[in-house]
Amino acid sequence: MDPQSETLEAIINRCLQSDQTAYAALYESCAPSIYRLCYGLLMNRQDAEDVMQEAFVYAFKNLHRYDSTRSAFKTWLYTIALSRCRNLYRRKRLPWMDFASLLSPDLPAPRSETPESRLMETSAKAAVEAALAELTPRLREAIVLRYGHGLTYREIAEVMGCPQKTAESRVRLAHERLRGVLQPVGPGLLEELIGIEA
Amino acid sequence: MMHCWKVRSRLVAYIHGELQPHERHLVARHLEDCETCYAAYLQQLELTRELEQVVPFVGADYRPDFKRVWAAMQSETVHSRSAPRLQSLHYGLAALIVAALFFIPLTFGGNEITFASPPTQPAPLTVRATPGGTQPIEGTAVAMHIVADVTPEPRRNLYVPLTEANTTP
Image (cartoon, rainbow over all chains, first blue to last red; front, side):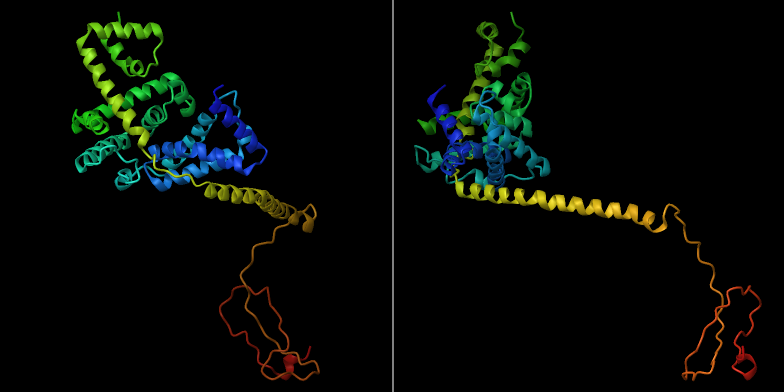
């Protein structure tokens, strides 16, 4: 067991003894990634915050049900958040996309600060994010879990509640769709990003 | 030797390192020999690198606010504590109403439930004044007698004016 997961387990144990500081610590360690997941799936700040809050409230209230032998805590939390996201986009289909918030000025500052590089970077990010929004919810889930959170196919399958082969084919299908959508932007998209990073 | 279509369907998993060693070896060998599949592999690899650089930053600007979640949790806990009582009260009330609707007819009528006969057409009224030794109040009828067995006849004047003859019993 690695030290980080051991720490997380210790925090969970303290939570189960109704220690409010432990709840705060657990939230601080998991909230950013859960928000990224919710935002990546819903593409809307307010919805992502609401769903994340709902997921955490549920998780905290049902913490005694979490079984560390069955899955990692983050996987369990991802499953809860994903199901809440699904509930939301079942209720309201993604009718629009908040491009202004996607091109957020709060994103980490690039290493190169010239106006041209900033423009190129934001256009590259906007292109990828707009392409993500074009995917069906299931394909977007697979891509966000794989690339946004580095989950393996087995973990993706666990979170999405499907067989591993299905998770794999969803990642592959999403790749095909994204390749089709991103092609009109041009093959130099990656070079733009690499050029900025260098 | 793997077919091209099979290799293409496994390329993403190959790039992600998700193939079994034997299958991985087969794909790698095919890519060495097939230029078309190798070109497809490069395209997928480029997209993979692009997504790996961009997707982790989607929604990465969030600052956690524990107070909001804690307050929501507290209010939900309070709500869930009071909710079962209120809910059971509602269910109890509904059950009481259903029981009352079922038992009230049995209670009043015993076991014989009789239904009221449908109303008949109302008969015309005749008003007779019966002084009977008392002082009649001016402008009001003293007594009323309903004649129920009046069969429909050609209309006639049923009003009998007050006279000495018809007021004596």
